[in-house]
Length: 148
Image (cartoon, rainbow, N blue to C red; front, side, top):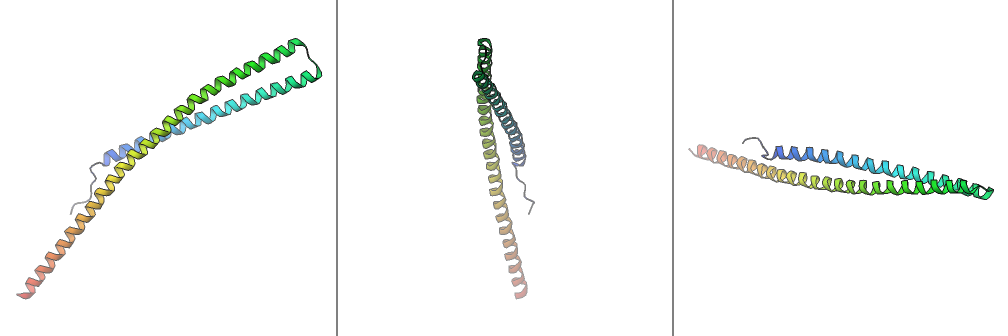
């Protein structure tokens, strides 16, 4: 009997390539999210440092101009943090979309693999049936030859 050939092999390879590409996109999106989280963490740490300096200077005494300067710096830092958090929300949304695309690509690939597995099982059964039929014919022929 002829060798097993899966007619959707090219589709399966395409699905595998798509899955790899989508996984790479998702990994890139995750990296962007992690990087943005680090940016926000650094900004929050800077805010805390400025706030601590402000409190220390308040205890020792400072001018109104210095207090206003600290207030301006703190508000500016809060705006930066808020801006970066908005970017993070967008990046997380993008990452979630990429994760969903990975899940869909895995499902698509698994579907084709399941079809391939089913077709291969059918192929193996057909070979077994063919071999059994050949053996039956061989045994029958031997019996007829032995009877003569």
